[in-house]
Image (cartoon, rainbow over all chains, first blue to last red; front, side, top):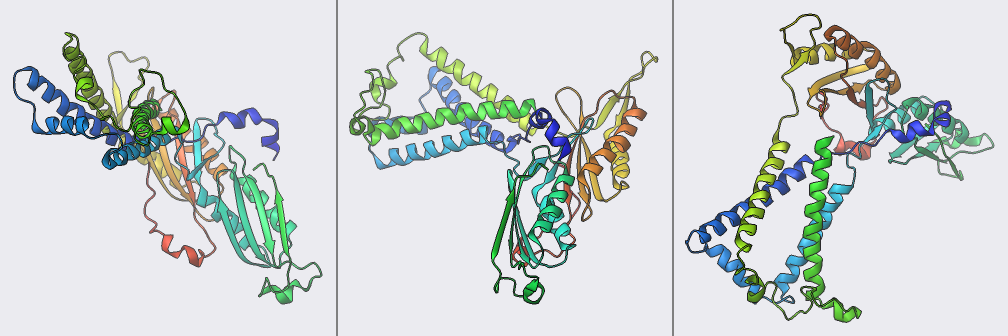
Amino acid sequence: MSGDQESPEAVRKVPRLRATRAGAAALVATVVLVVAGALLYDVIAVRAGQPAKRWRAQIADELATRHLDDPWVLVGAGGATLLGGWLLWLAIAPGLRRWLVLRPYGGTSAAIDKSGIGHLLADRAAGLDGIDHLRSRVGRRRIRVAVSGSADPALVQRQLREELERVGLARPLRLDVRTTGWQVAGGGAAGGAGGAAGGGVGGVGEGVAG
Amino acid sequence: MTRTIVNRVLLGVVGVVVLGCGVLVLAGGLDLYRRLGVDPPSWWPLTSPDQPVVSEPSRWRWAGSSWWWPTVIGVLSVLVVGMAWWLVAQLRRTGLSSIAVPTPGVGGLRLRVSARALEEALENGTAVLPEVERAGVRLVRAPRHPRLRGAVRLTPGGDPVGLVEHFEDGPRTDALGSLGLAELPADLRIRVLQRAPVERRHWFRRRRRGHPRVV
């Protein structure tokens, strides 16, 4: 907690990982290269006095005869719209969503697997008494943890928050802990096995800089 | 990093062109201008559903001009060369076979150290750090100077911050010192194993745990 509070600037400076998009780039480059190369070859051949290839005459003929409301034209245009939107998405979206950046140290920058954070939290909770079941979902902005068992929600929350702080993420995650099956009167131990039997649902959510 | 920017800009340009063509044809074909009551300017293409996609007159509009064919051939040539360059940039290997080491005070001597030797030294140095289960390190090409990429798997309950600090103060500093390099930045990708049994609903997702892959 201490390190994050004093340096919001440093937090903002660590960028998210961005995918290179090498695969998509290679694919698009290949397609454009093939199309442009074929057209260039044929245009030069026609300028040199040879007849145009059949495919080009056919495409030109189709384009000249089919009207805009032709189903094939509409399907093609719809496909082009989707494809263009997808390429634009690839260009803008960061990608590499599996990895969350850690605070860099010296010349070493690091990122941790999202499921690795889930493992750390699960292992920390496994060491506590009275937890039957724990499920965590790690997103890029927050972690949702659902705990069932007779353990004290405040204690679970505190322990998990400590564990999350220990990870040292460059961009803090919110930690939402939902506890089911906790009973105030201390009768929780008896009903611990069937956690949801009579227990209320205690939702504890708190922003955590970790 | 530069390759990421180039890739994303070019993908974005291609995406905008393809998207624009698609939307233009769709808007004309579904007669959106009339239905929405929009009045496009007179030069706006493809406004009526009854017109062909590329009519004969518009195809031959500039064909008679002297500049048309040289322009077409020039643009297509630029496109072919540019795309070939872009493709080659993707296929280029990211790995390096050796790294140049400075030799201060010794004139006329150029020294290169095998990348594999450096990688192995760093791998061994990382594998003995506390809480590390496996480690893989690669030396990769980067704009100004080479970079290290490491994939590290920590034992259950391992400490990521501790690993980063130990790696920086241990293997990386040692490598920099012994090679006399000024800079050799490193990126680590850290995974953590789980001690508690994996939940049942995840059983189909569990993969074989081989050697960590360096990406």
